[in-house]
Amino acid sequence: MKVLIVGFGNMGQTYANSFIGSGFVQPKDMFVLSRNEVQKKKEYLIPKQNFSTTATKELFNVDIIIVAVKPQDFKQLSEQIKTFLKQEHLVLSVMAGISIERIQNELNVEKVVRSMPNISTQIGQGVTVFSASTEIDRKELFIIQNLINTTGKSLYVSDEKMLNPATAISGSGPAYVYYFMNAMIQAAENLGFSTSEAIFLVNNTFLGAAQLQNRSKLSHQDWMEKVASKGGTTEAALNFFNKKNVSENLIQAIELANKRALELGV
Image 1 (cartoon, rainbow, N blue to C red):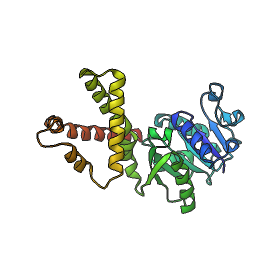
Image 2 (image 1 turned 60 degrees about the vertical axis):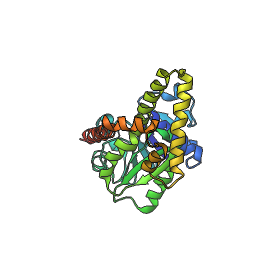
Image 3 (image 1 turned 90 degrees about the horizontal axis):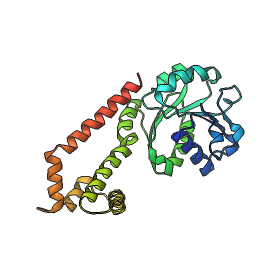
């Protein structure tokens, strides 16, 4: 199986390393099309001769094409590569907001999988939500899901419209977590901890809380009630969050992220 990655930023590199590291794709069968000569900046698992800054017929002699460019760059890219694509090509997109139908029309292909991974794919702990065009059969979908799962876990949705909410929730989600972690680190420093102590406390608190919840059947609300005793310190903080409508504001922020995902697809 030969794979071409178009765009070699964070996601392009993550997929390349994960596919090769898992053994699903051999280094000699992995090709890269990038606007920059990235092979001169760093040594990668892929042979240097498999990198290119120019689209050619030979470069597109592959089974799967992964489009990993920014959504705002797609229109220009499609004009450069569409003549090299064939109906039998299977295209996997990681572009936020760009619909399957638009990819089909602008690249003149039928078999399209649209996905939304998050940054944790870089360590094999990512979450990827994906959907597919009706032209893709079950065997092809199985192959794509196996490739995606080398970067973490995946969720298939039959309704492509759920990809935009997935972008707002799991795609952008790590940044929301880091936002709250930064605030807690600042609070810890304000209370007298050193920066390194604050980071240690907050990082491990988030890690432990997530693992505890994942290993149980209790809901997040159940765990909050277990931690927050009546009249205690946790209750004081949670009451303040509720007073300031932190939950409602977070929901509104995610809805804005979803709105932006929709705008990017226009």
